[in-house]
Length: 271
Image 1 (cartoon, rainbow, N blue to C red):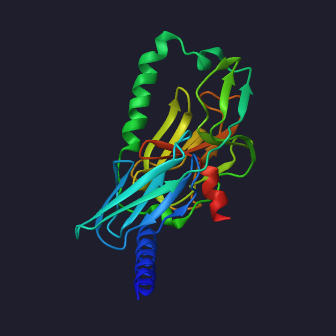
Image 2: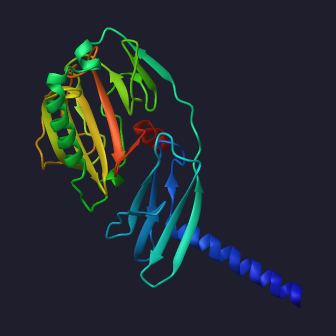
Image 3: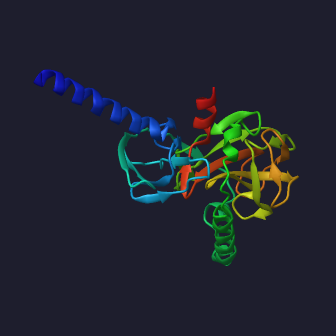
């Protein structure tokens, strides 16, 4: 009799645990630089390592892992009903490449002090644009590469520019000839267009909803305007070599609420 009760309790706890995991609907890349998609079956608030995470009206939410994210994080959900669900998730670790780039304009590697104010203004503008929030899940359209070409730079690589160690690279560099069409990698709303930023040159930033953004850099032409709704595959600009660049290419970067993630993982995940 006791054995039967123990067995029943075990089965109950097992299904309770499974239902809790399924209630979060977590899918994606559980790896440094990865993005995970979640969905609540009931109304509630989501916390990721104690930081509150946006949830849309349909229960969709996103979790992003930093370049050097720790190997374990905690997702906590406080449902409106009062129920609390806590789940530990494991994040795989990565080794990153070292990339050396020479023959850059020395003023782009180490800007003269006379450019500091300009750079500061541009950084503030970019940060402000990325904080424009849309409570929609445009990203559900999926993701494609914004341009065809040869991948010459990858996410997370430590960069040495003209022999000077710099910050890691947080995007994918895709080389192609100047003027090659660039398309929107997914659905979204344009939150920034600039023709001549100091480091990134011609730049477009698109919000895919819930704090997820794509930045497309070094463009020679821009076809879209701020506030415009764009769709996956829509032509938005042309490849260039503006800003800090050694040749025509597109630098595609993605960010989720301040965490820089690897765009290439989304393409691989789709495939």
